[in-house]
Length: 360
Image (cartoon, rainbow, N blue to C red; front, side):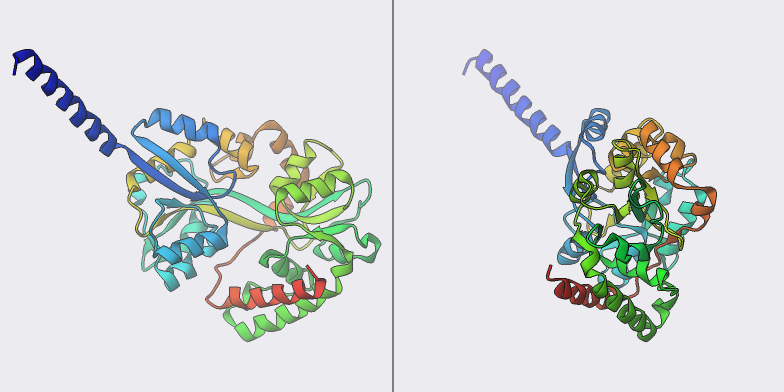
């Protein structure tokens, strides 16, 4: 064999080895997150900053996150984003998460109240399992030209709005109506017999309410379509959906209910068998950086869990939020409490009973 051929073979072999090494060095960060929490632009910017990391996104919700991770015993994903109240009991029951290494997360600008709240909810045996990412609320939305006094959960069932209101058949409406009826469902979590009694009353109320409901919404798109078309004049809603509609029609506003809007905090949480922890920590710090927060809030419609998060929102969403909430409304927020084992099964049966009665 000539020296020239030997040189070509050696070069080809070296190139193949180099390609193999580079391919094996690439890390895939598998995100299990909400529908708007990994916008294309942010993913692109992250991959440009970290060219050795490829982001793979699976969109989900609280129930599906738990279900997917339970089925795999915490495998298949490297970073999940469950809400702060859905972590403690899921971890105790299914052991699907692992503690965070707090030294790898830049917490210098994270809102201390939200951070302390999430840590309190998700600390097990002295180990912290989650930190906050975005927060928002569930409350009411109304077209003030047709429902000016729509300001309590019970107004969804007010006969004057018969056939013109909506709600989502999920556990949130059960909790909301419990507060409206003078109960504190979170305080009853420690006594499941008492909680069942509250659920029974709420179930009867929502079955009686069925003729008021134009349709039960399942996502922001169908709710938005009903509001913009005038099919409904008021509804239970995520605040982010209302904020988006406010930008299109200033008569459609988010209304914090008299008893307080229900507040959630979506988190960063590591699945137990994730394989890309370092990439996950990079993603957390990246999306919580000041230059990325406005892009993320523009996509989610929610508020970043950082100091001054409201001021970092896009102009239209910041305007809508400030139009909706007074300082007193913020103080009156009802943050979701940790869900004890068994509660979701009880709530599921209540929701099925309401669904069957409504013919949905």
